[in-house]
Image (cartoon, rainbow, N blue to C red; front, side):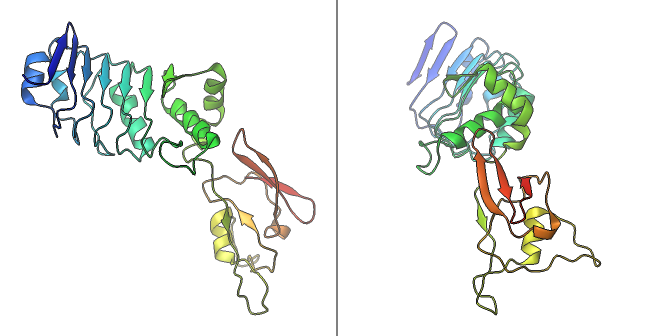
Length: 259
């Protein structure tokens, strides 16, 4: 078969522009293959991979695989590379891998939107990538290597403590004020403020729009640990804890909260 290279238990079918796994590939090689390389094709589906039940390594770099990627159960698979595909939903992928590849130790997702680094966007930086690694290790704690970089003990400890909060790359700041209020000064809309801080508003204690200086607040995915109601709209940015993605905010009356 043109393009097929077999060496012992290693099977390569690279750069053949195939849009699906050829049926004859699984029929002829699936029963013995432990390493399968299907990189540089046009794969959008992995239908037919179930014939390769003994796989230990699977290379799928430079294809067109997206969020609908479905792997069969591969209990022996320890290495999976999906570099330069079209995966954007990181959590969905990791949940799927945790279910079907329980022995996975090496994973590489470079070049996908789901992996935030300079290969995807110049706007991403090392802090984005650290948060991503922390979340991946939270979901797949048995990984030894992620994107060709060895997992450290410090990363494992960080994933245990904060991994569940690292679903999204470091939060971007939102400016929640109306520059065209009646008196010409900036004011915060109470409904927006309630949404982003998730504070209760009751009939006896409504949250009123408050005239403030421009105020930067984090999105609602960041949990509020402590907040002063009386000066809720008067926060100014304080120190930033880059290592954890947490932000300290100080209010005009000296009280503070952490987002």
